[in-house]
Image 1 (cartoon, rainbow, N blue to C red):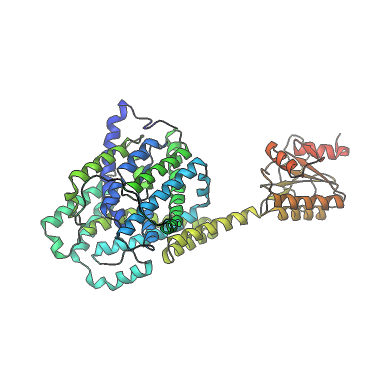
Image 2 (cartoon, rainbow, N blue to C red):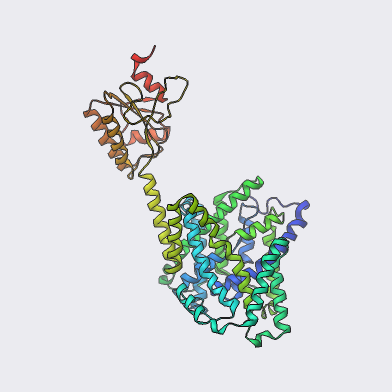
Length: 548
């Protein structure tokens, strides 16, 4: 395992500490907002920055990826746990802690058994659609905050929209003014100077305005009393049935974080030329989530926006996360009174601006231009997540992924290779239909593992090629791309071999991998057949009359 805080030295200590202060200024307002999205008290978002942040920073291999709750995870927490308990209740909080613990255990399991590849089933269209649906659901709640309208944040999307539309008559003018000013500062400020923590500035100025103008008396909602003190260690006391009910959502959170977290980690390591260990990163996410579950936080994952901010600040270590944890702890112990008068419209504006990129508008345009089928997959995931629910969305996402995988696997490239007469060239080009590789010889390439989904397809393709060409006496199977064979694929291949023998066609192999050869012998597919090192060697041996 890589040592903690790799890359930190005397030369960059001040820069890293300064980046930590910047991260603290970014994280506090966002985590308060994300806690509200999740239906939790503000302290849950702050607690997630302390113990989880420290343990993650000390165990992760990535030098830059920041771990914290994010908008999509918060929405998934709210929709999944909200279906099992009333938001704001003791059971709700306990279930959120248990959910984080389950995520932690799953992350550790993925790391120990090296199963991070499972997250690859979440392709880009699926992720864009799923996260975009969650983001739009979040956005409705934030618009309501910005307008000063009361809605049921734990309700379904349609219910939220109904509450928002029917509540337009109760719009609070001061709330709208605060929201508009906040959005202008956040959007305009980012264009003018990216290094300034505009979200924190918005919170401070908006709070001062609310206090000086007594705007709470004018109907502007504020955060309210925030419990002070450091996080304490707890253990969620739930029945077995309640734990089991949380497993599907924990799986969804784990896989989404795995897909996004490892992608972000790899991109920054490649950008700056340092090594990362995906399994160690998964273990770090596991440790962080377990810490969140026992210290009053909620599920943590990778934060793309904060990681980008740290990269822009020049940070190349995990010290900023530890500085943020220390600063948050000081705020919890000595400064929670400063948070009481933060206006909800300002929080709504901060979160609303933060989630805009998650809607995936740009990504959907790219998918539409590149592949309409992929666009449709993303759109369906978006719609199911938005109108049916997050768990249904992730189930549909995986069904689409499996169907897409099966469709591609069941239709691999199966080509008859063409010889061009030049002995210096490799036999790799596809021959026209109805032609042989050489007189009496077909060299056929299977560009995929041979398994249950494509075994019969491959057999049929070989039979068609033999029937379509006169005088075939030899079929050579190019096995270079066949990395594995399962039992069903072996049975289909055995049927093909029997058919070839009955048609007086001799079967041979070429370019067989060592591991695949052992598998072929184990399944009885490779007995006394010829095995050639190259396709050209096979053609030369089987058509001696053509050789000079």
